[in-house]
Image 1 (cartoon, rainbow, N blue to C red):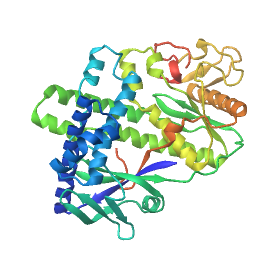
Image 2: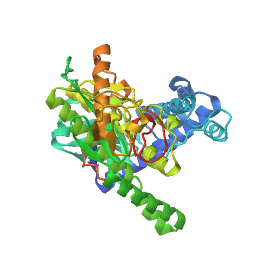
Image 3: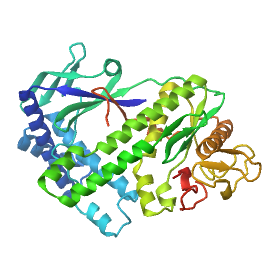
Image 4: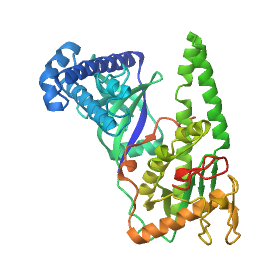
Length: 419
């Protein structure tokens, strides 16, 4: 399993200037190579290398490996663009947005990440320094720092390329690590059902709750502040907006990490598996009022699911994905399904057997039942493999921070999400 460990660099002013000049030169060269690829329709490394390799080396003074990575970065960007266009992320062919995106070369930010391989970057783990190639020559003894346990993972499991990143004036290296997987529990005693929502971000059948009330208040405050600064439009407002940029995303990511860690720890401790709702396509299925769309579509539920999946894989905990249809309307005792079973957002009252329970807790039990049934029938983990790779362990510092449909408050929502 692949993970990405982020370590923080502590360069001297001279080293920082060399790194900055290198990053700018590589991205300027990547923009030029992207234009050549677009003009000559040479969007594969071998074909683009024939047109761009020598000019990139001579014009920007890049080394052989750096030039190769610049060309590959441009080609990878077009591969991603094709996938996004094919997936409809830029609208249908012929629409204004689709034409705009596909009708111009891919552009890179001046501070976009630059990949490094072992020929350009060497690690001295005992001294906690790196030797890194720059356009001004080799910068040696560049200090890096991080948490002890994560630096141990870096020293033992690092394999492949690392990306040089400049974020908010700070330098980082994103190092790829390959970690051996823990043997999966072949026969869990049961499954923990995880019900996702807005008021309660996650409720489990084991009885744990992860409330979203405080988070939602902070998110609403952040949105109002962004709107106010955007309307003002002054230089000071733009500076403040830039300073706060990404704050909500960082807070959401930190919250998802904490929730997923607790859920996986509970499952590992009790010898159970984890059952998650399959929420693919919720944005297309959900019929919601405009204020509710903001709340549902802005919380990264897919990110939470992927965090649970990769942490569970490391711990050897099986994960299954189940159909979320009617989980909030089904009684977990008699399995009677009726919309009237859900009289309010928080209350579930079965009209058949009279069972009363908190709605999210009831839904989590239904998900757990379906997870066990899916496991018995399939006897394998159904977690998408894509979500189990390329997750980031921050070794530098802690991150701070479908069922029946009805859009009326207190009713269930498509995909199993609640108010």
